[in-house]
Image 1 (spheres, rainbow, N blue to C red):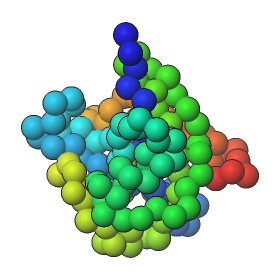
Image 2 (image 1 turned 30 degrees about the vertical axis):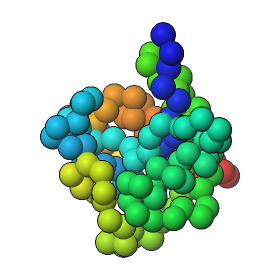
Image 3 (image 1 turned 135 degrees about the vertical axis):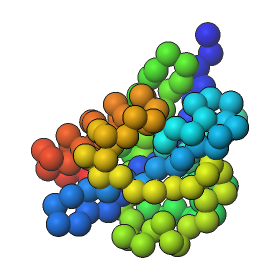
Image 4 (image 1 turned 90 degrees about the vertical axis):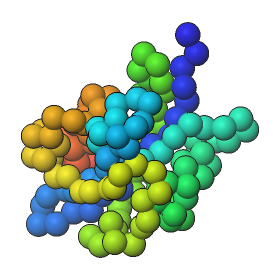
Length: 141
C-alpha cells in the first residue's frame, strides 16, 4: 500500500509555563474523521520538499505565510508518513489567520488535549511526544 506523504504544522505559544497548540476542527463533511481535531497541513505534491509542501498547505488552509518553522519529527503510520514541523506563534495567532479549511481553529493546552475525545489518534501521539520534549527542555523547541 502506498502511504500518503504529508506535512503538518504545530503552531504553539507558551504562557506561564504552559504550552498551547493550535489545531483544526475538521469539517462535518470531511471524508476522513469529520468533526475531529487535527493538525493543519496536507499532502506533499510531486517535486516538493516536505517544508515547501507545508508552506503551500498552510497558505491554502490558514491564508498565512509561515516564514520560520523547524522540523520536529517524521512519523510513519499505517496509511501515511507525517513530516511534522513546529513554529512559535503569538497568543493572538488565531485572530491573525483566516481558517479556509475545516470549521475553525483553536488552541489546546496539554490537559485540554487529554480531555478532548475527538482528536485524531496519530496527532494525539505526536502531541504527547511534543509536550514530552518541551518538558525535557529540548533545545530545538
